[in-house]
Amino acid sequence: MKRTYLGEFEELVLLTVALLDATAYGVSITHEIVEQTGRSVRLNQVHAALHRLEEKGMVSSEMGEATAERGGRRKRLFVVTAYGRQTLQDIHSVRNHLWNLLPDSFKPATSI
Image (cartoon, rainbow, N blue to C red; front, side):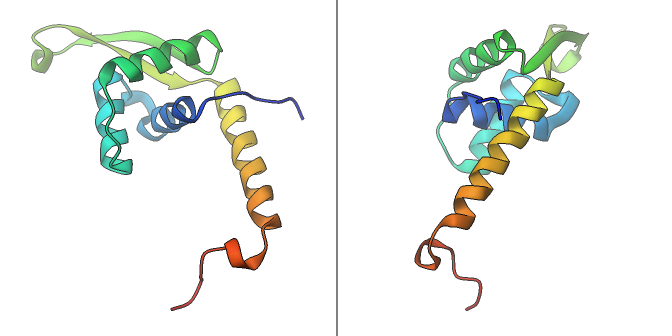
């Protein structure tokens, strides 16, 4: 398996772009990460991660239409590329494999 290197925050941003599908842009990604994780995230951090992910070929972007809510400004919308999707699946597979190898004492309880 080809190794895929993503930082934890890049992985979080990539997952969020996938979650938001075709509506992902800087502000929506930032809000979704805060809502889903409770983590404090700044817009410039998200933009930096998106730039790195685009350089790695894991997301692509295009300018959307101008909207009244943004005073006529356009949004840069992001989508996950096929390579980004494969990367997420590889990461998920490796993590699941490792979780399955853990002794039972590390696994979450399944009953109350």
